[in-house]
Length: 281
Image (cartoon, rainbow, N blue to C red; front, side, top):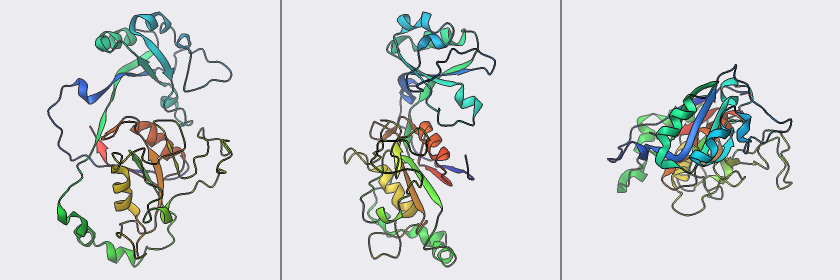
């Protein structure tokens, strides 16, 4: 975390009637160990696939509950002891999630075990007049532009479903990772992410944060509000005017966020000044 971090969480949205389980991701549990708990780690650990016997007692539960993977979802947060001791347990016996939680909580050295939330996007209005951008005048954005406009080095991370990097109103303002060389399939800056030039897809573990289909349009919309290129004769003006956009695709499912917290860790460890999270639960 090299730079100051401001996390903006926009929560006001209406949830449809749903069961409690619908607010969580099936087959996923976060497991936090105490600082004193002993862990058996190989010299060259792969944080995305850790042997279950690394955590005392976990292997005995593997067959009962169908554990299919153990990982460290926040491994990139190297300076956080708490996040380095947090694991993601993925399993198949979702019908017995509560029993699995109780079994995990009884293991030696476990501080807590909890289900992984399924976060959802804030409401995007579909009113015909929404595009008139009356909000910019209400917050007096033009007056601020007299002091801040072109040439900004402020980096805004859009932790969302995806960002269309080729959009003509977004591409001029994309953040470019100064420590990475494009296309060489090497993690040049040693941050744990290969070829993350403009950002990363933390949900699919690749360097393409673009929308896989038109259903993944929320992040592009949000990015435009945050920092579409202004005063360029194209599209809309934005609050950020010329701030740099770090694109962090944080889901594999349209209309939901499945890896938002991994996205936050990527953005913070990559030097974002601001993290925009237009979702919540």
